[in-house]
Image (cartoon, rainbow, N blue to C red):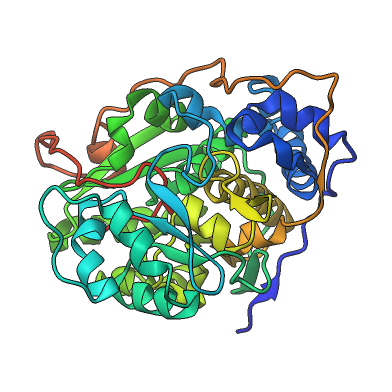
Length: 425
């Protein structure tokens, strides 16, 4: 079976990109001298309007005709505008010998790998790791740094390294068309892109079930308001991925789904005996795989800021790149994935949908236009319907027949606040 480019049923919206960008909160987070990314604005608004046509109601919840989704995490976290440092603070744009590099260092594991990545002595306990990285990468070519980072599982990208982009789909046979309303969506992904996709589908009427690891729940639970905004329309299931019984119950749950959202490296699911192709034969109609760089490079780690830069979705000011909005590859991928899922459910068939954050970002690179000088640049605001709390594992028994007592919540592993949204298993 061969993957094909996904052809959306909607058109980019014919809108004033400058005024909508200024109203959305995303312009406040981005260097205003760059203007507004016209193609991104029109693509996102077109997808949001398609989702709203199917009941999502996003245009009435956030400013900028739905563009406010790109800035709502920053609104809830009180993030500062981005420049060479991302709005979330975990990523930097650094000059190399022959270009620019986007580096994310927000996990303890990433910091521990710096000496191996740069072939230097271990850093002193109080060393400024960013100062060290900036000094070391300045004299080395971007390609070499990216290659070593990929081998070590570090989220590092050369700015504009991805040559082409877009969502790809592979057909796995026939199934009747159905509405997203009432469809069961099982979300295995964490952090932002996958959960946003699930929430948008829930707003269209889907029955959303979120699955988390018993040992390592979604790291964004530390950001309670943001987590609830994405999961407030979901039910919660917990799974011990080391327990064969739990994994078997998870497989049965996935077989009942119309849509599966996951952000795992393909090898991780294979180790659990979960095979997307096998399940698509007579189970889910849409299997949505969200990774940093697509399934063909599913081992490569990519988070929202560095993946966007890898796709070339940056603002250029005085010949230097700047981050766009807040981890922009995450929300644009979540929106694109949700709209594609609604379309594919309605068209019939069984589909594997391959969403790479960097590839989606690359597909939205285009002309920048001046901001509308008559429109004030608005600060980011959150949705006006905050979600409800999602007690961990509250729906496990009902959804999976889990007999165990409610799980004890453990502190999530330290993780970046912007991520590919993968399910770490």
